[in-house]
Image 1 (cartoon, helix red, strand yellow):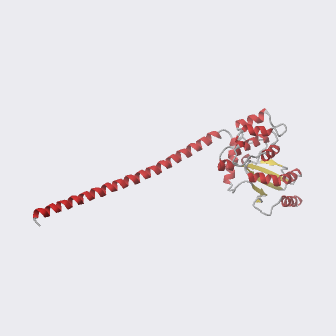
Image 2: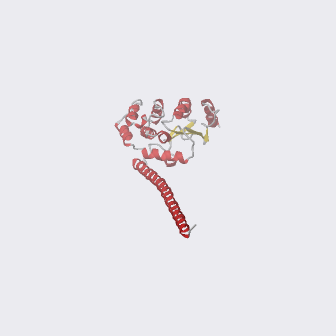
Image 3: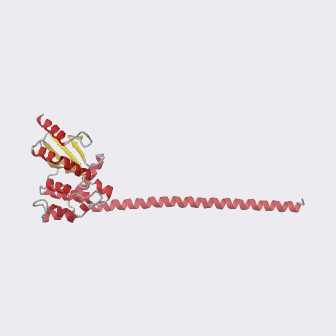
Length: 258
């Protein structure tokens, strides 16, 4: 092979090698751009999520802005308890509930008459504490609005009666009917003397909304698994599969005698 041909082939190989290096470099740049774009998209999504979360938190804060106004007669830590029954009763039943919660309604249906019998007899003190977990799970504001309305009823000494009306007229869990203040006011008509201008104003203004929020926060911090959470002298009896109204009555009466 002549020197000229060898030089030509060497030059061609060199050109091919250079071209391959260019292609490798271009491919590397392309992969870098793709990865970089992907990272930007992820970071962008995170930023969007962060902004949405921040704005959501801001909106929630704005909606619940204002002083925490506890309903009349509320007591306990931060005045988050609505008490029913004699203060000196030897047994205390703490009931964490959500007015949109079907299991809470089931508990009420089963135990209501027994609880009222024992509180009327001075043997049991019931402490109602309000949560809003269904709003969080299903969306809407019915848990919160109903809790505020119940607190408004407490202001005029009609919590128990209105509490029962709310459960007796509870909508399906996915139906945020209690998010409509007009519905809550309509139901107040079932409680004699409750549907007054003062009550309507309390409901419509969300007078106790911040108090409800604080109660919901206390529920979350308490580490409870759901509503209802029912504690008899600090012991969770709702988790006791053997518990019945008769057994509850027996335990309370034994404590009263002791």
